[in-house]
Image 1 (cartoon, helix red, strand yellow):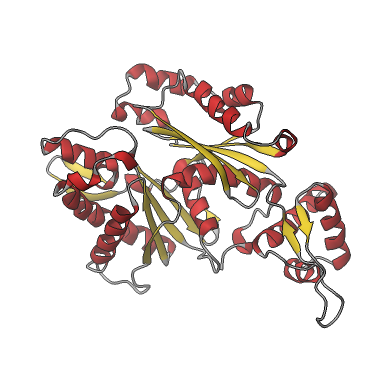
Image 2 (cartoon, rainbow, N blue to C red; image 1 turned 90 degrees about the vertical axis):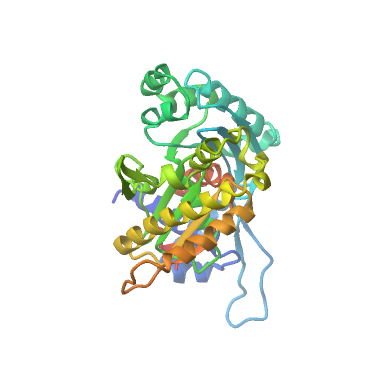
Length: 386
């Protein structure tokens, strides 16, 4: 390796240990990283000068030399994250601890390629302006979470064929960089949400996770052997497109059964008005008995997807979250657990199924966390899982 590359790798390893072990000492960092104490001291001096860490009060009264606890500075860097969703635009500003400082949301009928750059730019400027002027220079960039190959599906949410062409022609990274003046990185929405959920999970974190975010479609992600499975196109964990059964008119995928779009279709087929607006403002209490029927069908679908995925990657944990209210997520989780228990047993047994922690904010938070993690912290998940 080039010396500079090795130095950067060591720096990320040290910062990763500090980030996920708050209060760790110089000696403990050396032990955990395998780096010489002198190397750790030099790296800590550099990252302290860069404003990334702070030192606590010296701890005395222990064996050996007094230890100084090291902490990641929450205001050392900031990052913007924005989810371009099928029905909404959700943006957040986070600090280096991954804490949301401020958020903003707009709704739309579909993401319009003609206006999306300006709207994201408006969000970015509004959130950045909440920082003190001296802190704006510590804004590390803008992460975008969105469906991969958005043009292939956009007509399903009511857009016309012109939108297909416009999205195919739009160089979103370049356009948003010019609009905001920030470094822009684009992630699949399910991968970003999966990442943020992993970071929000207390240690010991599982190294193999199946993740679902039930929204207009199903965003999904996979952590396998401590690696976020993004694939060549960033869309490798598209579990919502997994086939779950076959009917006389052809096979069905999980998107068309377990998503909020599928719930809206059921309500419309039952003669109810099709719900519009933010998902949290839907009349959830008034959706029965259609809601119960959708939950049951969706739980069957998700249980089959979890079963098939778990036997491939040996996942022990499945996380289900959604844009719907928490009580509805909890009902869905309970029914998935039930239906998973009715499927054939495997040598590993069924994975543990639990609800998520971040809800609809997960994709935007993950889109903001990933640039910070990959720029300043370790590129391996070994330091944060297990």
